[in-house]
Image 1 (tube, rainbow, N blue to C red):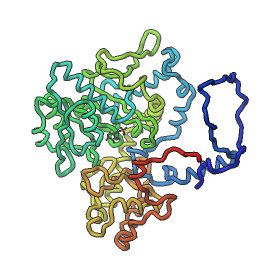
Image 2 (image 1 turned 90 degrees about the vertical axis):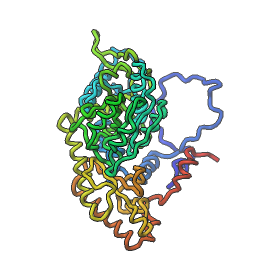
Image 3 (image 1 turned 135 degrees about the horizontal axis):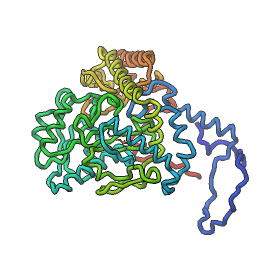
Image 4 (image 1 turned 90 degrees about the horizontal axis):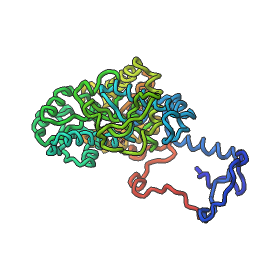
Length: 476
Ligand SMILES: *Cc1c(COP(=O)(O)O)cnc(C)c1O
């Protein structure tokens, strides 16, 4: 496929722009020194170019995309429409409170509903991503111990089934990390936890459901052990898909947590776009929160800052349009739709797991939450076909592969997250494709290294793409 710069002819274009109504000023020394190269194409060429470009990739409108809540959850288009409304998209962050009452109302609504869903008492919408939320939550834990003069608490306990950002955020926030290995079910080992806690424990960070898709059955015991040792409990709620409207971290004994609006609440994750990682906490930590709280004042809604705030973690109140999408999502699904989305996510994952289980090896053979992990270790050992080979072969059958080589504690891992909105027929088709590909790997194992054959690009040099990215077109 040609780049748009390589199409068209000099002087061609489609100027549909109205005459300029603002005075033209001489930019003086700020004027560019070189000619501005723009593609010179007709309207039809331009439109065809982007249509062709869109056809080069696989999206949720093309077929099954089992990256679930983590990336490709159901994100209704109407929420995008809400976020494009002029009154939301056209505001300036320094506008007077009285002019942005509707926007403050959106923030207040989202804060209120997320507190209700998580069982927390207060929430900041300021953090811009999940990891940023973790960092913020850890600052609250730090501020809490400091406010009590308990400064020997320098350690954060992180189970090895946690998301990789957990230990990274704890290190960023200045804590030492104590890693504890999971038990044979992939859950927290209570004995090891009991041994790890002590007078230097600042807290525990738990991803639940954990990265292998399991809900820890000892969750109440875990938070009790940490609290008894004087630590606080942090809940990584990036993927709330499996539990929202069903059970609440606040009721499990957690003190502080984050959510990823760009996963669970209607903004796609992974496209490099804006995110939002609100942090919720129990009342005793609320005075440390960064950002603004929206409260009722005498002249309407107003912005307030917490008394002993840890300070802003970024500029302004939030990545606001992401919050608008979450608001639209919460209000359209409502208190019936939110738990229904969770139930269907869990049902779909268990259905697929159950159907694949006789043929593929499950890393943990338990009832799963919104995702499950298979291990291709045996296949790799027996016929030198890796998880990567299987994933790439799926592409030729018109579905997107699942997450590969994650979580790290499972070798040759494929992690499948079907979304809550997939029908039984779609799941059955996907299962059949997984079975067909496995059969291919038995019959012609040596061919498996060359797939995909039908996609616009075949196997890419991923290391070079990450290390030496070419992201700018250079003119001769
Ligand atoms: C995605 C994810 C994160 C990190 O979120 P980012 O927005 O990518 O920083 C943290 N924890 C879990 C469990 C996640 O799935």
